[in-house]
Image (cartoon, rainbow, N blue to C red):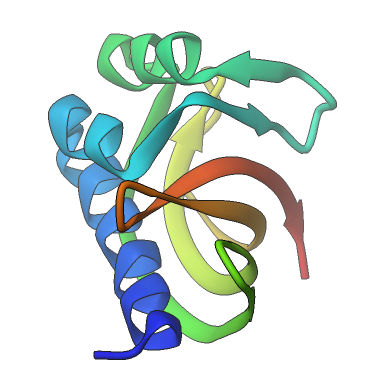
Length: 122
């Protein structure tokens, strides 16, 4: 697989881990300095986000991927994923969302790691 295919696979695995509440799997995809910027403007570290995922603040049930665009520039990359996601977050009801994730990635010791993501709708 080339870098673009590997990064697209990381995006799909990211969502599988979120749905499965697989903290170890998520940590394996993220750099030590990873952070998530929510649609609300809240910035969370990987630890804060994973605590919310495991504690029920964020509940993901399904994700159908519409598009995954990747641009690689040496040992860094940017990715935009667009997915229809069934989720219940921050105590709200279960709904279908059109979520866009704008990610940055960095190659560390030969492996691509997510360094940040910013969530929005599309």
